Length: 184
Image 1 (cartoon, rainbow, N blue to C red):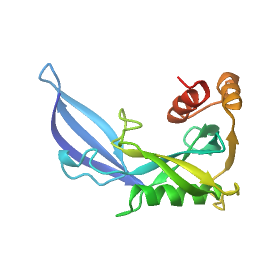
Image 2 (image 1 turned 90 degrees about the vertical axis):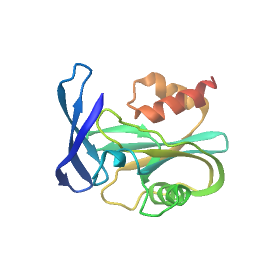
Image 3 (image 1 turned 180 degrees about the horizontal axis):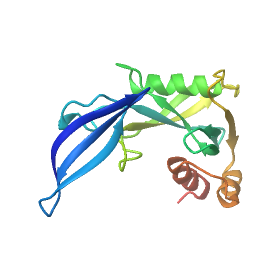
């Protein structure tokens, strides 16, 4: 596949829509629509910016999970603290901010900062960085009227139960929860 052109086709709130024109393996033109948090100008801009963080947090050998209402699917899912990185903001600062905003918790210790990845590469060039932390403090409700979040710490057995119960998870959280619960 060879990218021939990139064209903005609209913007709503935080997302920019773009049409990509590719030359496929048969030499034909393939039109593809995608969204980005960024205003893309050239093909080099695709996937070039760190957009957000995901915070994988533990406290006293328990994993923090958020049961959060997600408007795009009109239901609650289990996931992690996550959010956008502000312009020129280091990923660790964004992790501290998002953890505090969504749960009232503080970072006690940074365990690991992973490499960036693409959570939805079929539709977006969004890049996120996973930040693994130990937390301190007590959970407090999110003050935002635009978020419905119930945060709690879960033991490995409680996470196993959630995974087996059929509760809905975001994909990243489901995979990390599985490895936390089963240690494999």
